[in-house]
Each structure stands twice: as structure tokens, then as C-alpha cells.
Image 1 (cartoon, rainbow, N blue to C red):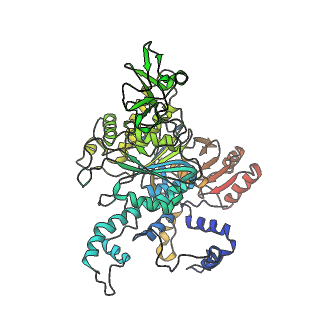
Image 2: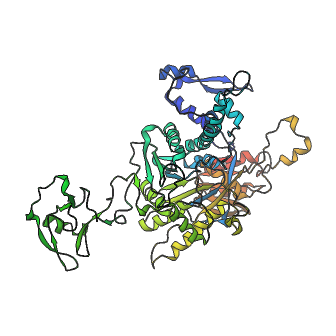
Image 3: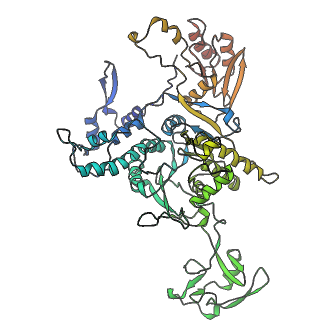
Amino acid sequence: MEKVNLATADIAAENAAKIAELFPDIVTEVLDEDGNVRHSIDVEALKAHVGDVAEDKRERYQFTWPGKQKARAEAIRQIDKTMRPCPDESVNWDTTENLYIEGDNLDALKILRETYAGKIKMIYIDPPYNTGHDFVYNDIFARTAEEERAESGAFDEEGNVLDAAYRVNNESNGKFHSDWCSMMYPRLVLARDLLSEDGVIFISIDDSEHINLVKLMDGIFGPSNYLTSIIWKSKSGGANDSGNVAVDHEYVVAYSKERESNCLQNDLYAVAATRYNLEDDKGRYALRRLDQQNLSYSKALDYDLIGPDGSVYRLEHKDPNNPNAIWRWSKARVMEHMDDLVFKDGHVYTKFYEQKGSKPRSLFIDDRFGRSRSGSTELRALLEGDYFSNPKPVSLIKTLLAMGSNDDSVVLDFFSGSATMAEAAMRLNLEDDRKIATVLVQLPEATGADSKAAKAGYKNICEIGKERIRRAGKKIVDELEPGQKVPDVGFRVLKIDSSNFEDVKRTPDTIQQSQLFGLADNLKSDRTPEDLLFQLLPKFEIPFTARIEKLNICGKTAFSVDDDMLLACFDREVSEDVIRAMADRHPLRAVLRDVSFIGDDALANFKEIFKTLSPATETKVV
């Protein structure tokens, strides 16, 4: 009987298997430290297949930093953690398709990868900007200044620092950027695994790490998958002018999973972006500048037109409202495109908008994309207090969602902060009749003891984010017109924790006989059957939003997930009657605990009963 392995996937083994599929002869056998035979990759054989390699070539084009190798190792390191369900903190637990995950996003990404690999259509993140302070995400590869110097070769053979100038530059510049790159690298590697083939990732960033972010992404996603660096006008007046240049913009860096895929759309603001063309100085407008040397339009184009308001408009080849422009539409064309004109205050203007299906623009400078302060104003009004610094505006995230997701997509934000993405998705779902499901991840970073947030009862950032979603959802529902469809305003709260099971991997010299009885049941005392169920879901690639029904089968508690895609019972002393009743439901998979069986032969009977009554069922023990 196969037992469920509760650790996350061995990504290194997966990568080796992918290479072996291409070149089967590179797989060899070696002895590990314990003397066991295991498969490994013959690097020399691989070189024979791929030809020239960069090994031993000191001059090569690459982006590296002290700590990169540790960051690479961290991306594939297995963890034995779980997500524990919290229905009491959730909204519409039984029906929602949205998730809110509390915990380190590196752990969350590794767990999510089990189920959501290749299924996320869009990722948006607003990671911590590099201000020179320590990051809250203290990964195991964070280094001291001394380790930084050692990895950078800043010591001579006797251990002396090479020169004072290097030491100063390294601490104020090298380590400054290295720590940020090491923090981001493994998270971006895992993010790529989560994206679908037509997926796209957007990353907000400022000047401090924009260049390094692009280099990081080139190394992970490939330069050919670079889409653009959108310039977002985040400030209006009052720009940050502490340096030599008043900076009033940020970037949104965009990469695709596969460049050939059609990963971006532009179908949200076809009407909402309409504005009157008052300057008439661009060739795509109905009015064209005289200095463009396009004077083929004669006075024969002058004509009178009765507008929708009943007024008579004199349309002349030379616009009396703008001496530098000419009117280039004939009367027949005007009559054909009346909906594309605006008759206002005695003048005629053309509309300007980005048509559906056109390429998105790289400049987000209009008011429709919001400003930094508008994001703060929105959140302040919703929470009735100033509890979070510099949240992104809903309009910006809604625009990115419209560009990067489909009508029925799963989207992810693993630096979710104040949970702007959740509100933006709910708004877009309502306005554009979509069914976007959100997965938000946030570290429960404590609010300052003297902060307004703490005094208002918000112990950490997650408390702010969850309350924002609750209030935004309620506001949306309250604003609905009679008969209007209610969007999904719920979310399931999950919290990352250590495994539900005690570590019982002990050697004889580290355990006493009296401790053996305590290991008979290795489930931690504070864990529930629901906790155990949610640790199992990723092992069967079942999403955390699956429908769960609690059943009573012959006096024992069982869980049916998504109409018996999984049927699990974790009770003790499960009789054959229970097992037969479970088999009679013909589930796709059936799971019992190893402590559930009565007698030494019960485990074998479990398998045989299902083999007889429901042979298609996959049986497992946890």
C-alpha cells in the first residue's frame, strides 16, 4: 500500500527527468552518502549532446551576484509544510473560488506549485522596493557583511580586506542589491512554473531595482519573453524631488511565459477611455495640422450638418476653432460615423479611444490609471482610517487584470499587501461579466505597536487585507441594481504552518523506549481532521477551493471532496463495514490513516475490498 509523501515536490528530480527525456543516455547510477544506489546526471555525456559550454570560460555574459547559487538552491529546496483552513475568518467558505493565504510567499509558492503549476493566467506583484533596510522575508540565504565579502573575493590570502573603497562600495551598493536579488530570485523561478503557457506576469518596481529586475527576469523567463516596462505616472504634482530629478513615475515590468502566445488583451477601456480631442494635433484624429503638408482637401469639403441636438454646424476644411488644423472628413463619412463624433458647445470633436483588440500602450499616464495617492484615498475611505502606506489604486490593477487575464482565469498576487487585487478583480468581474478567481498571499507582518493600524485592532498586514476584501465585497453587493448578478465576493483563508505530523524519523541512539508509545500516533495534538485533509489536497492536485462535504459513514467521519474525487477518513478503528461503504461510493481516490486499521491484516483488507468493489479507485494511506 503506497503511503502519501507529504513533502513538496523534488523539483531537482523533476528537472533531471525532463533532461533525461531528451537524452536518455545521460542518466547513470551512483552511490549516495548512505551507500544506496540512486540515479544521477552524467554531465560529461550531457556536454557531448549540447556541444560547447561556458564552463571554465572566465569571460562570459551573465548577471550574477554574491548569493545567487544559494538562491538557486532555495528555489528547489523541498519543504514539509501545510496550509491550515480557517473558515471562521473566511467569507462564503463553501462557495467561493478565491483564496487568501497567510504566510511566507516562498513556502506558499512551493505548496501552490503542487496543484496550480501551469494554471495561473496572470501574476501581479508589488514586491518591497529596495530602500536599504532589511527585508521582512529573511530567507536562509541572507548573508552577513563578512560572508558577502568572502563570496565576492574581497579578502587577500591572509584574510585582510583588499581595500577600504571596496568595503564601502560593497556594503552600500553590492550587498544592498544582492540581498534584494537573492530574495526575489527563487520566488520568480516558482512563479514561472505556476504560469500557464499563455500566462503573463506584471511586477511593479521603481528605479532602484528596475535594471536588476529586468536582468533577473531575462535569466528566468528568457529575454525573448520580455514584453515591456510600462511607465505609470504614479504622482501628480508633488513628485519625489529629493534627488536631481523629480521622479513622478514607476514601472510595471511585464514578461510572458511563452512569447509566441497571445497573452495580452486590451478590451476594457474601449468606451471608458473616451475623451474629447480638444488639441487636434495628431494625424489619427479627424483634424490634421496644416504644417503636415497635407493640403489636398479643398473648400469643396465645407458643408452644413444638423447635429443630434438640432443645431446647425458649419464644418469647414479649416477649423475656425484651431487655425493649425483642417477638417478631413467628408459629409458622407460624417453621416456614417456619427457615433464617433461629439457635438458640444457649438463645436464638433472626434472621440479618441483605444479600440478593443488593439495593442495595449506602454504609457499609463491618464487619470484612468490612478495615482499613488488615489490608492491611499480609496483604502482610507473603505477602512475609515489610514492604516496602510502607498497601496496601488484599484484602477491600475483592474487595467492590468483586463490586459493579462481571460473571462475565466485564476490570477495570483504573492505580495498582496492591502489586497488591492481582490477588490480590482471583484469590480472587473461585475463590470465586465467575468469570473476571475484570485489567489492572494501575504506574510503576516506585524503592525507597529504605536501605529494607527495596531490601535485600530489590526495586529498584522493580513488583518488589514482581509478586512479590505470583506468591506469591498459588501460595498459591491450593496451597490447592485435589482436583479443584477452577484459576483464572487468571498475568500477562503488558509494559514501556512508546519506539517500536521510530528517528525518521527529518529535513529536508535536518539530515542528512548519510553518515547515509542508517543510516536504511535504522530498527528500533532492541536491539528484537526480538516487540517489533515488540506495537507492532502495538493498531493492529488486538487485545488484548495474544492467543494468539501462532511459525511457520517457507519458512525465514522469522512470527507468527500468534489463529489468523491477524493474520499478520506482519518478516524481510528475503521471497520470493514466503513471501508465497504466507502468503496460502494466508487470514489476516484480513497485515503485512510495508518492508525485507522484494526489488526495487522486490516491494511491488506482495505486494498482488497476496494479492488473487489471499486477496482478503479486509487487507494492511499497517510
